[in-house]
Image (cartoon, rainbow, N blue to C red; front, side, top):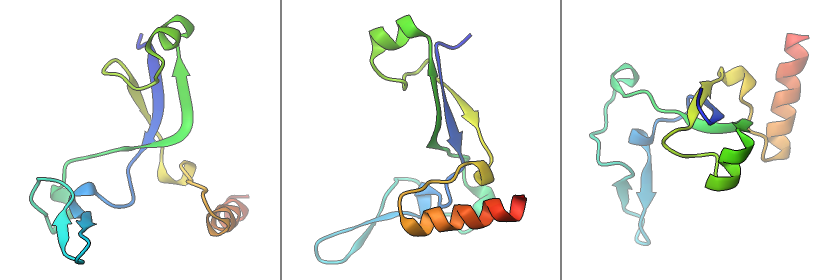
Length: 101
C-alpha cells in the first residue's frame, strides 16, 4: 500500500558508462563506480519514463512531489517506454506501432 508509484524502465545506457566533459575536453566518469566492460556485471538501474505518476491525494498534497523514499516503481518494458522529445523520436514510435498493428 505505497502512497505513490511511478513508472520506470531500464535506460538505454548505464550511468557507469557516462562521462562529463570538461571545458578543455577531458572526460571524467559520471559515477564513482568502476567502469565495467560487461553489461551483465553492472548493477540494475532504472530511469523515470513519464508514463505513470500515481499518488494518494492527501499524500501528494502534503509531499508536493511524487518521488520520496516511500514511492514504488512500476517497471515497464522498453517497447512501452518511448521517450518522445523530437520529430525523429515521434517517427520512430510511429514505425514501431505500425509494425505491432
